[in-house]
Length: 189
Image (cartoon, rainbow, N blue to C red; front, side):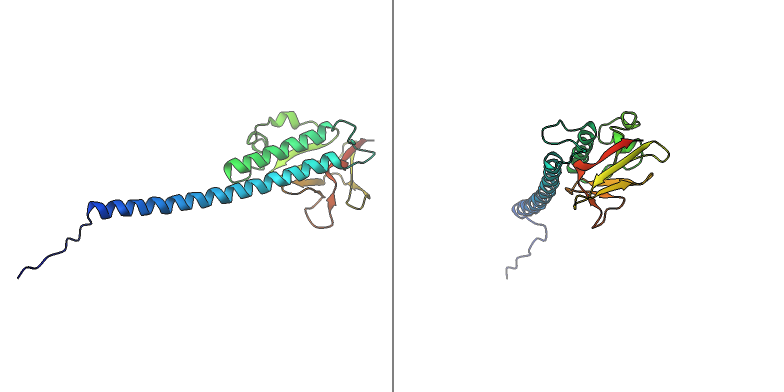
């Protein structure tokens, strides 16, 4: 009587096959992550393109037109938005919101933004750009809503520009508070 006892230890062929299967599973997971990250990145990039197009196409007599150069404040807003998007695309999360890290995380010096640009205080805040005036100064900030009406920014309030949105928002990011980014301007009293 000849009985064969099966060895419970896998052969080298079986072990190699198992490693190949694990490698294929890991490759599939990596490919899925890459596809998801690239789609998120292209969505953010598309939103930035829409924001840039809105900034350059919208005309307002109190803000730069297509024939005029873009104001320094609009350039700063666009630059910060692009830096926030780039940071997110690289790291998968938004930069910190407290100073000075809200600037240094995206390669800027907070001291360069301590003074207003065209009367506007501009700062990165996670996934948004904050535009404000200071309480007690002699500068008033205005913008146009989507109906073309002028809104006045109360002292201490802000305009918020999410990087994934073509509009900015007066005081709170909520429907009905949209303002045209290129229409934001300041007037000294």
